[in-house]
Length: 539
Image 1 (cartoon, one colour):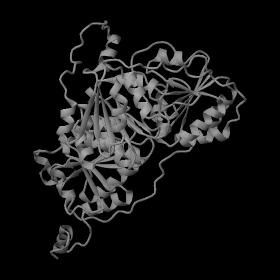
Image 2: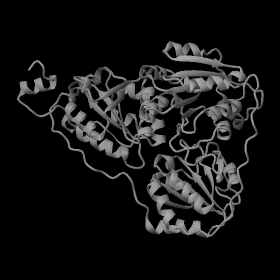
Image 3: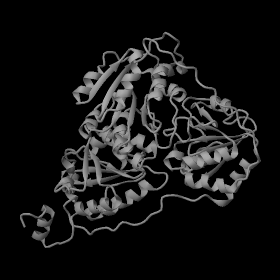
């Protein structure tokens, strides 16, 4: 018996041949294809890792926000749920910003959280979570601490099914430390549908709106690429000769940026949305809210005379839209149904989007010159993971997204996503070149993710856009009455040495300040076999 796993030795001693909760859960995770565990373990989780199976891999993050950010990127890249293991209240608390981002990203994550042993919970023990089911609320779809150890596999299964049902999102299961070695029965996985079909009469209304209009516009959001509806959306736009905008604050790109029908990106401001969509009499929003706003606004939500229809997989988003017809279903299913249901008249092609003026080299470099050069030297199928808020409007003009599943960012507005998500996306897309395009301020929320990239030797080119400040905050300050030249407290970031930070994590690093050296440096960095960081000093 000395060669047997400890769980089997314990079973022999007690006469109970049933598996432990640990073995039943691992068997269930295996059946779900979740054999990669992202975590940062604490004392209450150690029993899960006893006799850790060879067909599982454990991805250690050096902070819980890094753990969840990696899992978020991995789940999006693989189109599957990812399994996360966090430490009781302290670990979940550290991860809350990243959990909020996963919630906004609609990323399916099954999060297990440690808890102290049941026998001492009445005594408020050290490292316990006093209210584990509410700690992550409202940013998880489901949260539970099972009533009995035997119920843990069922709770994990329910959490998995809920995480993967549209709209997807994170879930949390709190597991007392002594549950893992208790006896239970194996749980067989079930088949549970994850998408909803369009309602026929509402679909007919949307189709009629499209067929009868003269100047249609599409607003394409995160849900298009997330639901694999890129090709169908392109076909529908071409069928109707519709101008296509990317929705405000979209975390994915759902339409090729070099297509003649592509009109650009909508700002998260009511008046600017109405202005951009002016002249269109029918607006179809696909996989996005209608609309996401960032600042206060007044007046109409739509241009005069325009009708609105929306296809969204989230009934909550459909419910709060101020106007229009909402079709709640899978985005791909809805767009595919519209392709079959519409017979539009022949319409003239809409005007082409005006090209941005060419950026010229300067010292210090402009962000436009950096992104223009990066676009010229990268392959079209390179995957961009972006978290550079102040550079994003410039990116929209100078670095188009050409293909499906090649752009990821966070939908939450919270910082710390870009570096760990780059690692997760690289893990989920083996062999793909990943570019982590991150601002200097954003990178400092999860700089530890460089260590993961080095340990795994992933082909990631991290580009740090260093303007030595929280530029997005300074640029936003005018909405609160700040005038040019006014000093904004807490927005300057002098003295950060990203070369030293990268090398301290074992990552090769370069700095570029001369625009004449930019193209060559980027070309070389995009050929690296392992991770490399390029810090670019910009104006």
